[in-house]
Amino acid sequence: MPYILFTLILFALILSPSLWVKWTLKRHAADRPDLPGTGGELALHLIEEGGLAGVTVERTDQGSHYDPTTKTVRLEARFYDEKSISAVAVATHEVGHAVQDHFDYQPLKARHKLIRHTAWAHRAAQVTLYAAPFAGLAGRHPGFSLLVLLAGVLFMGIPVLIHLATLPVEMDASFRRALPVLEQGGYLDQADLPAARSVLRAAALTYIAAALISMVNLLRWLRVIP
Image 1 (cartoon, rainbow, N blue to C red):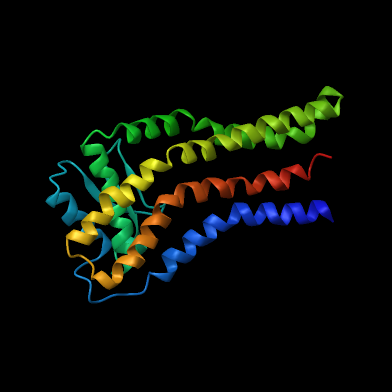
Image 2 (cartoon, rainbow, N blue to C red):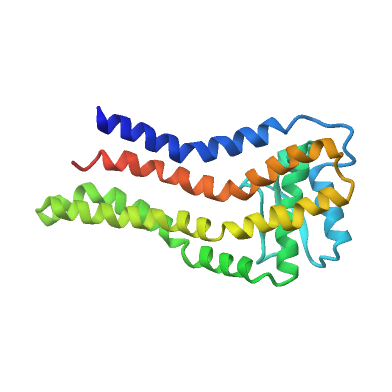
């Protein structure tokens, strides 16, 4: 019983950020015909207004993000094509990353390098976790399984640690770059700004929430090895 309770609590702690992010984005996704444009249109407008030469905007099915390698703001269709508080705020957040890049914001560059150089960690985690149950048999000692499992856990934790360490980059994009634009640019009414702040906070936590979800697999693998 204590193990089951611990597992449930751990699941709740891991899943709650992701559930909150999804709930916040959905809560403010209602169609708003009164807004002057879609998220994609606003992103293009802000890029032009900010003189961000060479930055483009496109739809994606891989999650909204800014790619500094190709200087591309990528928005999910629900944010690119729709008029909603969520669409406007997410689009402005991602353009905030483009502004960071334009002004050579070093924490953004450091985060991009970290993610690029540790992309192997997710694959390594999968391989080691799958191999863990057989490691003890191959080495004829259950300790080998535990060592391999520990390695998988460490690999799995790398993306989470990176996103936690670079959370200031996301907060900067939301509250130092995007929020002042929405407040001062007249793109939203004053009454809509509290909702926009909630969405910007969710946008800043999206990567951490996604990384934490990968940790759910850990609980499943912990049950494989006694």
